[in-house]
Length: 301
Image (cartoon, rainbow, N blue to C red; front, side, top):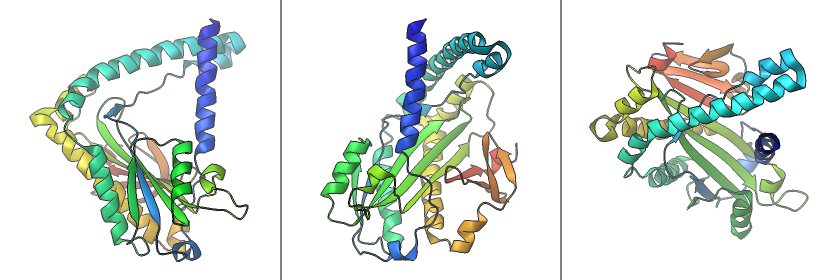
Protein backbone atom coordinates (compact mmCIF):
# COMPACT_ATOMS: atom_id res chain seq x y z
CA UNK A 1 0.00 0.00 0.00
CA UNK A 2 2.78 2.44 0.90
CA UNK A 3 4.44 1.67 -2.41
CA UNK A 4 1.29 2.62 -4.32
CA UNK A 5 0.96 5.86 -2.35
CA UNK A 6 4.58 6.75 -3.00
CA UNK A 7 4.21 6.15 -6.76
CA UNK A 8 1.11 8.33 -6.84
CA UNK A 9 2.96 11.06 -4.95
CA UNK A 10 5.93 10.78 -7.30
CA UNK A 11 3.69 11.12 -10.36
CA UNK A 12 2.04 14.24 -8.93
CA UNK A 13 5.40 15.75 -8.02
CA UNK A 14 6.77 15.00 -11.47
CA UNK A 15 3.82 16.76 -13.09
CA UNK A 16 4.37 19.83 -10.94
CA UNK A 17 8.06 19.95 -11.84
CA UNK A 18 7.27 19.59 -15.54
CA UNK A 19 4.76 22.43 -15.30
CA UNK A 20 7.34 24.57 -13.52
CA UNK A 21 9.81 24.00 -16.34
CA UNK A 22 7.38 25.19 -19.01
CA UNK A 23 7.60 28.86 -19.99
CA UNK A 24 4.43 30.87 -19.43
CA UNK A 25 2.52 31.54 -22.66
CA UNK A 26 3.37 34.76 -24.48
CA UNK A 27 1.48 35.06 -27.72
CA UNK A 28 3.29 37.96 -29.37
CA UNK A 29 6.96 38.60 -30.13
CA UNK A 30 7.29 42.35 -29.77
CA UNK A 31 8.99 44.48 -32.40
CA UNK A 32 12.07 45.19 -30.26
CA UNK A 33 12.77 41.47 -29.79
CA UNK A 34 11.95 40.72 -33.43
CA UNK A 35 14.38 43.31 -34.76
CA UNK A 36 17.13 42.95 -32.19
CA UNK A 37 19.41 40.67 -34.18
CA UNK A 38 20.11 39.05 -37.51
CA UNK A 39 21.36 35.63 -36.42
CA UNK A 40 18.97 33.62 -34.29
CA UNK A 41 19.85 30.03 -33.63
CA UNK A 42 17.22 27.33 -33.28
CA UNK A 43 16.87 23.73 -32.21
CA UNK A 44 14.23 21.17 -33.15
CA UNK A 45 13.39 18.71 -30.37
CA UNK A 46 11.65 15.37 -31.02
CA UNK A 47 12.13 13.24 -27.93
CA UNK A 48 9.88 10.34 -28.88
CA UNK A 49 10.97 7.67 -31.31
CA UNK A 50 7.57 6.33 -32.29
CA UNK A 51 3.88 7.17 -32.39
CA UNK A 52 2.46 7.57 -28.89
CA UNK A 53 -1.01 6.47 -27.81
CA UNK A 54 -2.83 8.66 -25.30
CA UNK A 55 -5.28 7.23 -22.79
CA UNK A 56 -8.21 8.71 -20.93
CA UNK A 57 -6.91 8.83 -17.36
CA UNK A 58 -9.30 7.38 -14.79
CA UNK A 59 -10.57 9.88 -12.19
CA UNK A 60 -12.67 7.79 -9.81
CA UNK A 61 -10.82 9.34 -6.85
CA UNK A 62 -12.47 12.70 -7.46
CA UNK A 63 -15.94 11.31 -6.68
CA UNK A 64 -14.93 8.78 -4.03
CA UNK A 65 -12.88 11.39 -2.22
CA UNK A 66 -15.79 13.80 -2.09
CA UNK A 67 -18.08 11.08 -0.77
CA UNK A 68 -15.75 9.18 1.55
CA UNK A 69 -13.01 11.56 2.64
CA UNK A 70 -9.37 10.46 2.82
CA UNK A 71 -10.16 6.71 2.80
CA UNK A 72 -12.46 7.15 -0.19
CA UNK A 73 -9.83 9.17 -2.02
CA UNK A 74 -7.20 6.49 -1.34
CA UNK A 75 -9.45 3.70 -2.61
CA UNK A 76 -10.32 5.80 -5.65
CA UNK A 77 -6.64 6.47 -6.33
CA UNK A 78 -5.89 2.73 -6.27
CA UNK A 79 -8.76 2.10 -8.70
CA UNK A 80 -7.57 4.95 -10.91
CA UNK A 81 -4.08 3.48 -11.05
CA UNK A 82 -5.35 0.04 -12.06
CA UNK A 83 -7.85 1.34 -14.62
CA UNK A 84 -5.31 3.67 -16.17
CA UNK A 85 -2.76 0.84 -16.36
CA UNK A 86 -5.29 -1.44 -18.06
CA UNK A 87 -6.06 1.30 -20.59
CA UNK A 88 -2.35 1.85 -21.17
CA UNK A 89 -1.81 -1.88 -21.77
CA UNK A 90 -4.72 -2.00 -24.24
CA UNK A 91 -3.45 1.08 -26.08
CA UNK A 92 0.09 -0.29 -26.31
CA UNK A 93 -1.17 -3.58 -27.68
CA UNK A 94 -3.47 -1.87 -30.17
CA UNK A 95 -0.90 0.61 -31.49
CA UNK A 96 1.95 -1.90 -32.04
CA UNK A 97 1.00 -3.03 -35.58
CA UNK A 98 0.61 0.60 -36.66
CA UNK A 99 3.96 1.52 -35.15
CA UNK A 100 5.57 -1.34 -37.03
CA UNK A 101 4.00 -0.14 -40.28
CA UNK A 102 5.39 3.38 -39.68
CA UNK A 103 8.92 2.17 -38.93
CA UNK A 104 10.26 3.85 -42.08
CA UNK A 105 8.35 7.11 -41.55
CA UNK A 106 11.11 9.52 -40.48
CA UNK A 107 9.19 12.06 -38.39
CA UNK A 108 12.43 13.55 -37.02
CA UNK A 109 13.74 14.51 -40.45
CA UNK A 110 10.37 15.80 -41.59
CA UNK A 111 10.00 17.99 -38.49
CA UNK A 112 13.50 19.40 -38.93
CA UNK A 113 12.92 20.07 -42.62
CA UNK A 114 9.52 21.67 -41.96
CA UNK A 115 11.04 23.98 -39.35
CA UNK A 116 13.89 25.01 -41.66
CA UNK A 117 11.45 25.83 -44.48
CA UNK A 118 9.13 27.75 -42.16
CA UNK A 119 11.85 29.84 -40.53
CA UNK A 120 13.41 30.64 -43.90
CA UNK A 121 10.15 32.32 -44.91
CA UNK A 122 9.90 34.50 -41.80
CA UNK A 123 11.43 37.99 -41.74
CA UNK A 124 14.30 38.02 -39.27
CA UNK A 125 14.68 34.24 -39.29
CA UNK A 126 16.08 33.77 -42.79
CA UNK A 127 19.64 33.24 -41.54
CA UNK A 128 18.67 30.98 -38.66
CA UNK A 129 20.91 28.01 -37.92
CA UNK A 130 18.69 25.02 -37.06
CA UNK A 131 20.05 22.11 -35.02
CA UNK A 132 18.31 18.88 -33.98
CA UNK A 133 18.26 16.91 -30.73
CA UNK A 134 16.43 13.98 -29.16
CA UNK A 135 17.33 15.29 -25.70
CA UNK A 136 14.89 18.00 -24.68
CA UNK A 137 15.99 18.23 -21.04
CA UNK A 138 16.49 21.63 -19.48
CA UNK A 139 20.20 20.93 -18.95
CA UNK A 140 20.67 20.06 -22.63
CA UNK A 141 18.86 23.17 -23.82
CA UNK A 142 20.76 25.40 -21.38
CA UNK A 143 24.01 23.94 -22.66
CA UNK A 144 23.04 24.60 -26.28
CA UNK A 145 21.96 28.13 -25.37
CA UNK A 146 25.25 28.74 -23.60
CA UNK A 147 27.25 27.59 -26.63
CA UNK A 148 25.15 29.60 -29.05
CA UNK A 149 26.69 32.65 -30.68
CA UNK A 150 23.27 34.25 -30.98
CA UNK A 151 21.55 36.50 -28.45
CA UNK A 152 18.24 34.68 -28.98
CA UNK A 153 17.50 30.98 -29.13
CA UNK A 154 14.39 29.31 -30.56
CA UNK A 155 13.23 25.91 -29.32
CA UNK A 156 10.70 24.00 -31.47
CA UNK A 157 9.46 20.89 -29.67
CA UNK A 158 7.31 18.37 -31.61
CA UNK A 159 5.19 15.42 -30.59
CA UNK A 160 2.66 13.20 -32.36
CA UNK A 161 0.01 11.08 -30.71
CA UNK A 162 -3.12 9.01 -31.18
CA UNK A 163 -6.27 10.02 -29.29
CA UNK A 164 -7.53 7.55 -26.63
CA UNK A 165 -9.84 5.70 -29.04
CA UNK A 166 -7.39 6.07 -31.96
CA UNK A 167 -9.89 8.13 -33.99
CA UNK A 168 -7.49 11.08 -34.28
CA UNK A 169 -3.83 11.72 -34.92
CA UNK A 170 -2.62 14.91 -33.26
CA UNK A 171 0.61 16.63 -34.26
CA UNK A 172 1.77 19.31 -31.81
CA UNK A 173 4.47 21.95 -31.88
CA UNK A 174 5.57 24.03 -28.88
CA UNK A 175 7.73 27.06 -29.74
CA UNK A 176 9.70 29.17 -27.29
CA UNK A 177 12.05 32.05 -28.09
CA UNK A 178 14.49 32.91 -25.31
CA UNK A 179 17.07 35.67 -24.87
CA UNK A 180 20.51 34.29 -24.10
CA UNK A 181 20.76 36.64 -21.14
CA UNK A 182 18.25 38.49 -19.03
CA UNK A 183 18.75 41.76 -17.21
CA UNK A 184 19.96 39.71 -14.24
CA UNK A 185 22.60 38.13 -16.46
CA UNK A 186 21.58 34.45 -16.59
CA UNK A 187 19.94 32.20 -19.14
CA UNK A 188 16.22 32.67 -19.56
CA UNK A 189 15.47 29.01 -20.31
CA UNK A 190 16.17 28.49 -16.63
CA UNK A 191 14.12 31.47 -15.44
CA UNK A 192 11.17 30.98 -17.80
CA UNK A 193 11.61 34.49 -19.19
CA UNK A 194 10.46 33.63 -22.71
CA UNK A 195 10.13 36.36 -25.33
CA UNK A 196 7.51 34.20 -27.04
CA UNK A 197 5.94 30.86 -26.08
CA UNK A 198 2.97 29.22 -27.80
CA UNK A 199 1.77 25.70 -28.61
CA UNK A 200 0.07 24.51 -31.79
CA UNK A 201 -1.93 21.31 -32.26
CA UNK A 202 -3.44 20.01 -35.48
CA UNK A 203 -6.07 17.30 -35.10
CA UNK A 204 -6.55 15.05 -38.13
CA UNK A 205 -9.48 12.63 -37.89
CA UNK A 206 -9.91 9.14 -39.24
CA UNK A 207 -12.75 8.95 -41.80
CA UNK A 208 -15.54 6.62 -40.70
CA UNK A 209 -13.86 5.97 -37.38
CA UNK A 210 -15.14 3.15 -35.16
CA UNK A 211 -15.50 3.26 -31.38
CA UNK A 212 -13.01 0.44 -30.86
CA UNK A 213 -9.35 1.45 -30.84
CA UNK A 214 -8.17 -1.80 -32.45
CA UNK A 215 -10.53 -1.28 -35.39
CA UNK A 216 -9.32 2.29 -35.77
CA UNK A 217 -5.69 1.17 -35.63
CA UNK A 218 -6.42 -1.21 -38.50
CA UNK A 219 -8.03 1.61 -40.50
CA UNK A 220 -4.97 3.84 -40.02
CA UNK A 221 -2.81 0.86 -41.04
CA UNK A 222 -4.42 0.24 -44.44
CA UNK A 223 -2.22 0.23 -47.56
CA UNK A 224 1.05 0.37 -45.66
CA UNK A 225 -0.34 2.87 -43.13
CA UNK A 226 -1.06 5.37 -45.90
CA UNK A 227 -3.88 7.11 -43.95
CA UNK A 228 -1.60 7.56 -40.92
CA UNK A 229 1.30 8.82 -43.03
CA UNK A 230 -0.94 11.34 -44.75
CA UNK A 231 -2.39 12.49 -41.41
CA UNK A 232 1.11 13.06 -40.01
CA UNK A 233 2.12 15.00 -43.12
CA UNK A 234 -1.02 17.14 -42.93
CA UNK A 235 -0.49 17.67 -39.22
CA UNK A 236 3.09 18.88 -39.70
CA UNK A 237 2.00 21.31 -42.40
CA UNK A 238 -0.89 22.42 -40.19
CA UNK A 239 1.18 23.28 -37.11
CA UNK A 240 3.72 25.13 -39.26
CA UNK A 241 0.93 27.24 -40.76
CA UNK A 242 -0.44 28.02 -37.29
CA UNK A 243 3.03 29.04 -36.12
CA UNK A 244 3.45 31.37 -39.10
CA UNK A 245 0.03 32.86 -38.44
CA UNK A 246 0.86 33.43 -34.79
CA UNK A 247 4.17 35.10 -35.59
CA UNK A 248 2.56 37.28 -38.28
CA UNK A 249 -0.42 38.56 -36.31
CA UNK A 250 -0.92 42.14 -35.20
CA UNK A 251 -1.28 43.03 -31.49
CA UNK A 252 -4.98 43.58 -32.14
CA UNK A 253 -5.38 40.10 -33.63
CA UNK A 254 -3.44 38.57 -30.72
CA UNK A 255 -5.72 40.26 -28.19
CA UNK A 256 -8.83 39.11 -30.08
CA UNK A 257 -7.93 35.43 -29.64
CA UNK A 258 -9.65 35.48 -26.24
CA UNK A 259 -12.85 37.20 -27.34
CA UNK A 260 -14.75 34.25 -28.82
CA UNK A 261 -17.16 32.05 -26.88
CA UNK A 262 -15.87 29.07 -24.95
CA UNK A 263 -16.25 25.98 -27.14
CA UNK A 264 -15.68 22.22 -26.87
CA UNK A 265 -14.79 20.36 -30.06
CA UNK A 266 -13.81 16.68 -30.20
CA UNK A 267 -12.51 16.70 -26.63
CA UNK A 268 -10.64 20.00 -26.92
CA UNK A 269 -11.65 23.23 -25.19
CA UNK A 270 -10.86 26.84 -25.97
CA UNK A 271 -12.20 30.15 -27.19
CA UNK A 272 -13.63 29.91 -30.70
CA UNK A 273 -11.42 31.81 -33.14
CA UNK A 274 -13.02 30.73 -36.41
CA UNK A 275 -14.83 27.86 -38.05
CA UNK A 276 -15.36 26.77 -41.65
CA UNK A 277 -15.90 23.65 -43.73
CA UNK A 278 -12.18 22.94 -43.31
CA UNK A 279 -12.35 22.83 -39.52
CA UNK A 280 -12.47 24.77 -36.27
CA UNK A 281 -9.71 26.82 -34.67
CA UNK A 282 -9.69 27.22 -30.88
CA UNK A 283 -7.37 29.17 -28.60
CA UNK A 284 -6.66 28.42 -24.95
CA UNK A 285 -5.08 31.48 -23.38
CA UNK A 286 -4.15 29.72 -20.13
CA UNK A 287 -1.78 27.38 -21.97
CA UNK A 288 -1.09 29.48 -25.06
CA UNK A 289 -2.50 26.72 -27.27
CA UNK A 290 -3.80 27.02 -30.82
CA UNK A 291 -5.90 23.94 -31.63
CA UNK A 292 -7.18 23.20 -35.11
CA UNK A 293 -9.69 20.35 -35.42
CA UNK A 294 -10.30 19.20 -38.98
CA UNK A 295 -13.74 19.66 -40.55
CA UNK A 296 -14.96 16.07 -40.28
CA UNK A 297 -14.38 15.84 -36.52
CA UNK A 298 -15.57 19.39 -35.86
CA UNK A 299 -18.89 18.61 -37.58
CA UNK A 300 -19.44 15.77 -35.08
CA UNK A 301 -19.08 17.97 -31.98
